[in-house]
Image 1 (cartoon, one colour):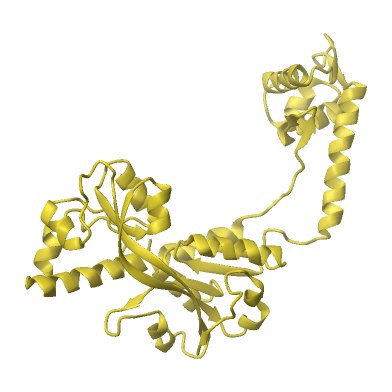
Image 2 (cartoon, rainbow, N blue to C red):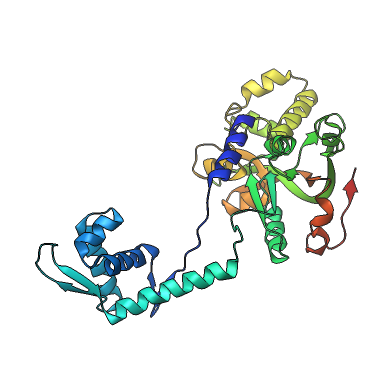
Amino acid sequence: MSSHDIASVFDLLGKVSVELVPLLRVNGHAVTLREILVLDAVSKAGSLKRAALLLGVDYRTVWNTIDALEKTLGLRLVGREAGGAGGGGAHLTLFGEALLAKAKLVQARLASLLGGVDVGRPDVIIAGSDCEVMDRLVTELAEKGVYALYLKVGSTLGVEALKKGLCQVAGVHILDPKTGKYNEHLLSDPELRGRVVLVKGWKRVQGLAFNPRIPDPPGSLAGVVERGLTVANRVKGSGTRILLEYLLERTAKERGVPLSTLKRRLKGYDTEYTTHDEAASAVAAGRADVTLTVEWVARRHGLVFRPLVTEEYDLLVERGLLDRLPLRETTIFKGGITVVQ
């Protein structure tokens, strides 16, 4: 995914509209919006044929929908009169009228409760690396009345989205190879300097996750290369890809071999998987032997995990937003927050 792609993603989000509809249940059986619309069309049109025209579907679709619903509920919902120039008449029975009336009542009450609120508009947009702790944070913020849209696009594209004003928070774990520190160097970026602060987040373990069929999986990248194992690599610019490049460079120095040689010997080096889950799925399916990922992803996909490094996952937050986010009220930041200016 490129910076152009991320802009396209946000463009798509702007075109998405949200319509909330009730899901009714009768004796435990779900009645879908599609079925309610068919009943409403019959009520308005007075025949199955005209109801089909009103809905823009064929006659058989209307007939089959009503027939299936009546059999599921064990109730006669539509009365039919055969023949006539209009193809026969149809009307809702008392059961059908009651069901339609209930659906309209619930929809009206739902609209009243929302009071014109655009439920599809988030209070804050978060873009960045995939992390289960971030998922928990989004849930806890919602419980406190702050609704976030969390886009798992990787650290680098999260930063790009923040630069373009497409999001207000970026979740990042980008190592600075020069200092060995995480994320703080991003504050000196000319496009972010003065606009954002860095909220120190949490630590997580990155390591090698192997397909269970690999016997005695190695605990280092050097071992992966020596065994001729195939890696499911991450997309360029992702925090994990940056970490892998750093580990390869360190391994090359330790072994006294050119970095280019090590990259050439690492099977699968040129592959690019967008997310942790995509890479782990490739390993689980046998399309690769190993990937560099976080521990919880390895567990979720049933992979054998060998820890390598403990990294830092932090939040780049627009300066004006920080005081409006109830971070201190969440269990994740219950000990307080540390802000780097």
